Length: 407
View (cartoon, rainbow, N blue to C red):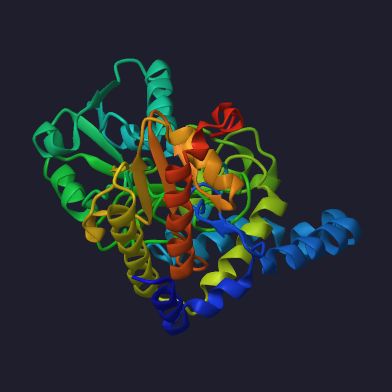
């Protein structure tokens, strides 16, 4: 494909106008939305209003007058529409890690007598760390790690919970959510899905897959800003029996009754813990307006096409790079993952050229493809820069080999 043909695809792109909803520096090719989404323009004005009017002048009254108190449910309902859930099945709060702890612990309580949590080696580290920590607080829990191909056979009546990331953070490999959830249910286990690298870029149908529980990140493809609140999903059929291990006051049935004894709130409110991050949720709520009127099927179609174009160009023009992601777009998340022994300095050389991706040890170059603002010409230009970095061996420069704290 030529650059002119890529530009023609952009002109025909039904999502092209969505790019105008984001703050993107002229000349910058931003391919790291799978790590931190770009800033939606709507966020700046909404945050200014929240800070100056609601906090600055409304002060404590804004919990009622600006309806701060309902932000977790309101934002959760917006996210639910993007992940195939009902509005009352999702709440926005805390971080992905905290929500994983709450939901995994709650799942174990829903399956008394079972002690095994099944996952895969190489899962996103915080998922495994949280499960390891949970095991220290709940004696007898066994974290069993099995390669993806062996997961169906590893599901037996000792398993309480299957916990997997829908789209692998490093390779972009997709799990078959519906099939694995069905296999878990056949042995009486529950399924908890981490949607951090799926929500906002892929078609996700939690209820269509009969999923039990899910968590996800607010600052990647949902564009909620650095450290944005995460979300939690508990299927309606489990909500009455779900018990959070973090029984904070905002999860109480009547938090302002200030009683000594905890009584869980109704539905997803019981998944709350402490006071919600009002500014963080306000930013996320404004960011989600970028999805208004967009079909997730259209996002997914563009995501697959962008990834295919990237891989086609790399295979044609960059023979020294390996491919770590699935070549079949149906099995790939919204990212391209390449490999090279000198992956880190190559990524740094690209960033110096204005092509922002990231690196994951030991050798993976990641490029996130956010369909709301990534363009076909961005992909073409990114590969052109990659060709030049490799041909000129720019990555050998000492400045690109100094490893920073965040890669």
